[in-house]
Amino acid sequence: MSRIIIPPYRVLKTKTFETIFPNKNGVEINYFYESLRTHKRCELVKKGTSANNMYLEDPNFEWNPQDQKLNCKISIEIHSPTSLFSPIVGVATPSSKLGVAVIWRCKESKARGSVSLDNLEITENSIERYLETEFSIEPGILIGKINFTFVIYLKSYVPCEKSFGFATIPGTILGIIDNKDIYIDGNGSMFPILDEVSNSKLLWRTEISFDDLTETFDEYSFCLYFNKNHEDYECLVTKNKNKHSQLFKEVLAQALFDFIEYARSRDDQFIDNLEGDFEDGSIGRQLKFFINVCQWKLETSHSTLNSIRNFIEEKF
Image (cartoon, rainbow, N blue to C red; front, top):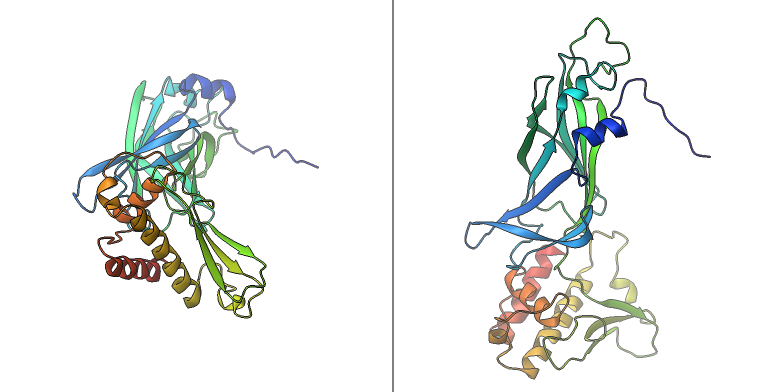
């Protein structure tokens, strides 16, 4: 059985919303980060078929949400804000003030927060305008997907003669302007790891097969297999999903080293050849991610293994 909750105060109705926010996308967000290499502001590219469900890609292959902030520049087009203070369809008394806030949630990291966009204040004297402001999310928080919910809330309440039915408590949410899901791992790294049941004496093995850097990076070009039949299989995994065993980290490092060395065996100049453009999901893109984002040093086999192990120890 579903339940309908009727709030004991006025909230933003559909017709009023369409009058005040004519832009169907509600809020436009552009995403930036500061390059650790050049210290310049760089923009992340939004990709996807829906304005409310997109992923971010860094054409420079530098941004790492674990080490760098995500800066968000938002734009809101507001028409006829006086409607919000109308005694008939409004949500606040004439002398009250309304604010705009963003509530963000990241399910995978179990993190959430809210930011009051202080300079986006709406009063009965506000005129049609295009509002812009920025906020940022600290590094080390975002994993996978983040949800943004933009809301109008009561910033301050001033009673009037006919104030019945209006919210009176500052902070009360009076309407949702927009809701967006953003995937932040658009050009990130995914390691194909599968379990198998085998009579082999090996605890783990890799399968690597590709001829060209333009091929797709998937379980058919590179895959790490764990043997569930092996007596030491339980040593690979831990009960804590956020913590990996030391054996797992050592195996992962060696498997990724094998992948890099296989690429080197196919083309000993493969690092120089990475200067070109590669399609999303290709092996070339993955290698550029390793070099530019993970900071792996692939000049020699020795530097490759050491940089991979250092990275995995730090990040896993």
